[in-house]
Each structure stands twice: as C-alpha cells, then as structure tokens.
Amino acid sequence: MEELLLSYGIDWLNLLVRWLHLITGIAWIGASFYFVWLDNSIKPPKPGSDLALRGVSGELWAVHGGGFYNPQKYLVAPKELPAELHWFKWEAYSTWLSGFSMLFIVYYFNASAMMIDKSVADLASWQAIAIGLGTLVVGWLVYDGLCRSPLGKRDGWLAIVLYGLIVAAAYGLSTVLSGRAAYIHVGAMIGTIMVANVLMVIIPGQRKMVDAMQAGKSPDPIYGIRAKQRSVHNNYFTLPVLFIMISNHYAMTYNHAYNWLVLAAMMAAGALIRHFFNLKHKGRIVWGYPAAGVLILAAVAVAIAPRPAAKRSEAGIADPAQFAKVRAIVNQRCIECHSDKPTQPGFASAPAGMLLQTPELIRKNATKVYLQAVQLKAMPLGNLTNMSDEERAIIGAWYEAGAN
Image: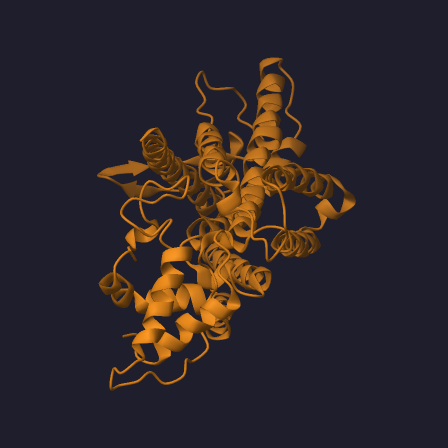
C-alpha cells in the first residue's frame, strides 16, 4: 500500500511540475518569438527626426487588445537610464528549473525503466544518470567555447558546426541510453544552453551596460552584440526542443534503429521552418525554406513507416493455442505495468491507460500491442521484463493470423 501511495504521489508531482514546465515554457518561448519578430519588424526613424536625435534605431506601431503600442529600440542604450527596467529572465529560469525537475521525476527516479535499454548498453542506473548530467555540462562548455572563439564571428559556419555537434551528441547518446532517454537529453542539453545564454551572457551583459550608464560612462556595444547573437541562437533552438518535448509520446521516432538520424532530420526541418518566419518578419518571403522543411518531414514519415505485415486473415480464424501463447507472454512481460494495479515500481497506473489483463482487453488492443512490441520494439519499456525476439514473433504471427 505504501509503495502504491508513493507511486501515486509521484504521478501527481509529475503532473504539477509538467504543467508548470508547460506554462513557463510558453511564457519564455512567447517572449523569445515576440522580440525576434520585433527586432526584424522595426523601422529606422527618418534622419534628423526627434527619434533619431534621441538615439532610437527603430520603432514600430502596433495594435493589440484594444490599445495602440509604440515600442522603440535603442541600438546601444538611451541617453538617460529610465527609473524602472523590466528584465526578461525569470521565464527562462523557471522553464529550466521545472524541466530539470521533470528529468529527475520521470527519468532519474526510475532510471532502470526510463533510461536503460540493455540491448543498447548494460548500464547501472547511476552510470546512466551520470551520462545524462554530464551531457548538459559538456554541451554548454563546448557551445560557449565555440561562440567565444574566432568561429563565433562567422554565424553561418558556427551554425553548421553547432548542428553537427548536436547530431554527434544524439548519436553518442543513442549508443548508451534508451532511445527515449537519448532524445530527452539532447533536448535537455539544448535547453541548458538556451537558459545558460540568458544567465551567463545576456543578463550579465545587460547589467554591465546599465552599470556603465549609472557610472556616467558610455556602454560598450559588444555586450549588446553578444546578447543578440545568443538570443537568435535560442530562437532557432526552440522548434527542435519543442519536438523533443513531445517525441516521448511517439516511439516510432526515438525507438527507430537510426533514431539519431531521425532526430537530426526533425531538428533540421524545425530550423528551416523557423528561418522562414524570421526572414518573413524582415519582409523577405522565401518559400524554399518551409518547402524543404516539409519535404524532410515527409521523407522521415516514409522512411520510418512500419513494415507492412503479412496479410491478416479476413476470416478471423486463428489457432486457439497461438492465443494461449500470446496471453502467457503478455502475463509474463506486460501485466506488471498494463493492469489496473501495476506492480512495476514507479507506475501508479497503466501507461497510456492501456490494460491487458483479460483476453478481451488483449484482443481489443491487439494493433497497439503489435505496433509497440513487434514493429517498434518499444515495449516493454527498456525491455525490463526481457521479452525475447521469439516471443515478439509469436505475437506477430498471432496478429497477422487475425488476432483472435
């Protein structure tokens, strides 16, 4: 009973922290998208105008919610520091803190099920967790070093190198962690880079500019230039990270034999689509970018599609002995999680609400069982119950014979 209540409590913690992560993520991403749009949409003032004389580099008139807005941007800083400044930072910090909490609740508290696939690498839980945490630290150090190196002054080449390194990280993680854990840690690494950009570069640079103005000095424009570069990086990282956040619901991506390549393609599609919108905000519409993104998505969908099964019996006749074997396999390998009272630690309810404890429920969910256990080999999670290829073949043969 205590174990059941603990699992139930963890489920509620998971729900509330996930909800918080979603809310703060929306706030951060919304602010990021808005300011990149604003940066790309503002128009420079006329030479000699009052705005130009005050150092305004661009302005925009907008209408929203029944009011008119006139945001203005100063290229370096205004001549006089305003009494109050709003700092956009807590949206980023709260998103990362809630996301890091999710890593612990979902993955690190149950590493044996969520992070380890013994067919990939036979790791202890602490080893899997150490790899995950190490990825976050190393990812930031490598990224920040590249941005501060001479390569950081060449945005195009920097983007190509960073993409290659992220893909390399995806490949490396896919050789030691389960596909699901590999994906989420690539996302966590990118998310850590994004929030560290805010914490370590953008906000400190802005504080130095404010401090200089308070001391009666002219702010160094280099801080604004660095902040802009990191902000743009965060903007392009957003769609790939969002895909990774939802990918854990789609085993067809993270459980594919070439899952790292699938992720590389999805990230490229996201970046291309984001680039289209960034150009559009500047008044340039280049349909080639979203077209390329859509083509990549279509190619991935075709490439990872399940293999056609042998034609199922339309007569609905199957050997009763075959179903008896299937039920025995389900009882031994699946019921620990897929019952109304799971016995597998860490699960208070059946994943995705799928129950398999009666013959009727097994037959009702036959297609899902076939897809997840036979085609994708995504279940059992991390193959905790050691379902063999022979057992998967028995389930496959039963399904293809009519699933009776």
